[in-house]
Length: 126
Image 1 (cartoon, one colour):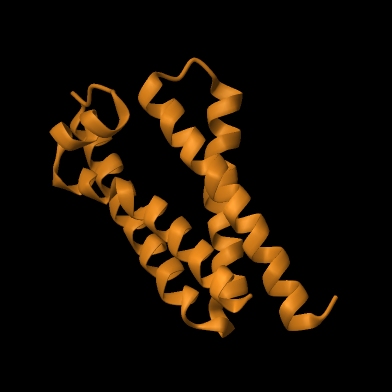
Image 2 (cartoon, rainbow, N blue to C red):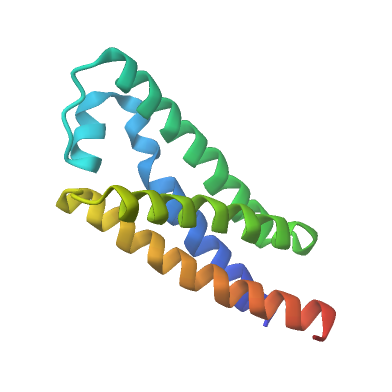
């Protein structure tokens, strides 16, 4: 079962690493999210967001192989994906590119839920 948790955390880590290419500039961000970034302030924020997702993605992958960090990684991943989904749904009207991000995050929620249940049951025999 530990290998299943490892695999699920790696999957969620990869999902979080996908936007890292946005750090390269507005062209890549536009391709990722289907938005125009004409405001330099928005570019700064979005490129920084790409770095933060990279850090979280790397942490998720590292934690996949460090059982003592897995619960923390699962919680961090949940916070990341659930807040994005909640914000997207509350705002609404998002484009096709953002819809793909929402779908990827729903997949991540399912993976994290499974990883969390397996982790807790196998570690704490609940």
